[in-house]
Image (cartoon, rainbow, N blue to C red):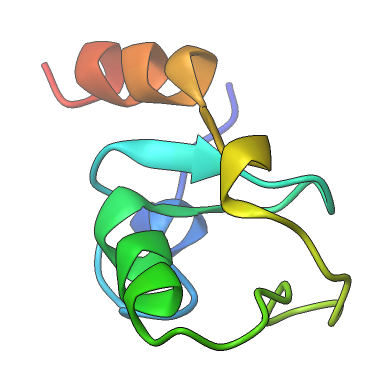
Length: 74
C-alpha cells in the first residue's frame, strides 16, 4: 500500500492544493488560477520549473489528475 502525501498534489506556484489542474507542454501541472495569473501578466509564458516556453493555447486540463484527486478526497 502506497500512501499519497498531500504535498505531491500542491501547486508549485501557489503553494496550495491543486485546483482545476492543467498540464503544459513541459509535462508539469499547475492550478488553472496560477496559469491564468501568468497569462494575465502579459509576459512570455515559460514553465516555472523548466523555463520551457509555451503558448496559452497549449494548456490542457489534466482531467486524469482531477478525477484522481476527487476520488482520493472521498
